[in-house]
Length: 383
Image (cartoon, rainbow, N blue to C red; front, top):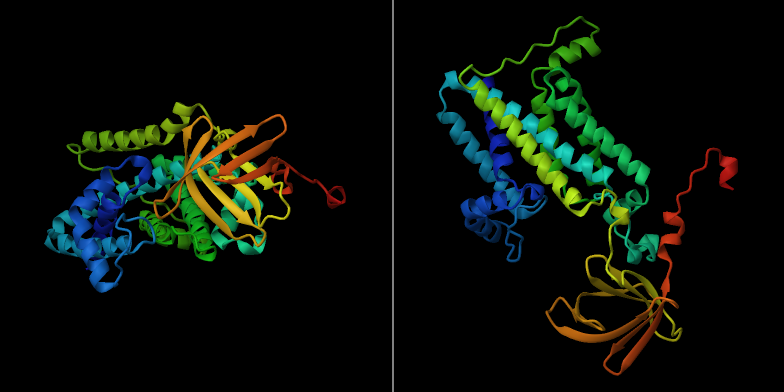
């Protein structure tokens, strides 16, 4: 019974790894999942959860992901029940090995993203000019982490180290133990700051614990009871399957690593803080002090954000209509043609909304205190 339960858990992890989309691996998982489960998931979300406008993209913490997980649990129970007892050890072995590889690839992805400053990116000007108390907790966390390149690189190195240790059998146990600590920390960050990857990090933690299923009791005896132990060597699959298994491991890790690194190699930029921004990217303060409009921000993802004196904001997606024209589009699809002129020498931006003209001066947002590379070796030097 216990072996069948463990095999069922392993089968669920196999199905989850196959059908839960990881964006950095391309769109094939999302397309397969949408084809097989999209209609059923949409129907369940609408009928059971009474949600007419839910996202059916299976992203973490979405209703569609919750439904997908439930469906995969049900399917894994049926599949495991149909498997003969003699085949359960093989299912358990391969599910554990693939789960371990999956954890390693995820850690490689997020470790490299942190090292190259692409996960905890530099906070945008509109965030820097907003009052602390007006920001949501998840934005506060993300923005604070983004101000420190040292922290980002350090955390990335730990995740990369855990991934590399996992990939070698002799150091796998140590790597998985480190990964358990890392993912526990991530899970509580996601819970504490309401970051929407809670469910995914929880499943990732369960995978890491599952990867150590044969080591927990020996480690308990060694660490708690102070007994001498010898960790069991994981036996490789049969000789017939060994070449296929080695090819799969090499291909999966190698392909994943190429897809993770390709965007950085293609751009030639290994520090997102220095990546190219749009022409008008930055913060502009309205020169008219009598106007209710206080700041105009241009976001790196081509959004214009207007902030009034009460810090209420309106945002529009923009595109370049021509050399001196911007096309602003609101969330209702309504478009506005805006003429602009930007004089870099005196940092003046002029926007013409029909008959209304706004003149704003560019702010040097990169000189704000949050972005200053300060380090104090003693408290006396911080005064």
